[in-house]
Image 1 (cartoon, rainbow, N blue to C red):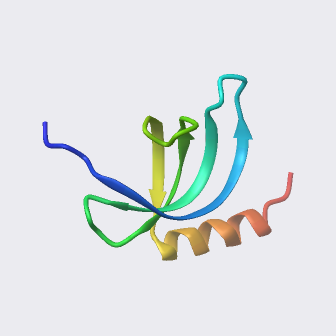
Image 2 (cartoon, one colour):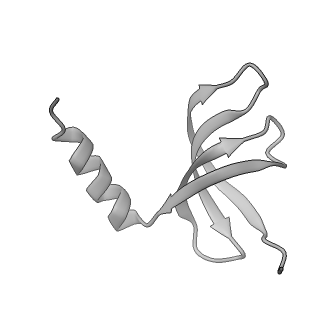
Length: 73
């Protein structure tokens, strides 16, 4: 399995933190040297370990933002 590289280009914010120090974060991340994407996942305190997550392009993030702004329970 090829090695996956990443660079957190910009930290946007933390949604929550566990007692063990892991944080659910929204960041702009470049995966394998590609253009950065919005990335939502759990990270260890030192950002050397990560959980499963989801990435969004700018267009997808704009659409998600619209959906959330118009969300009604």
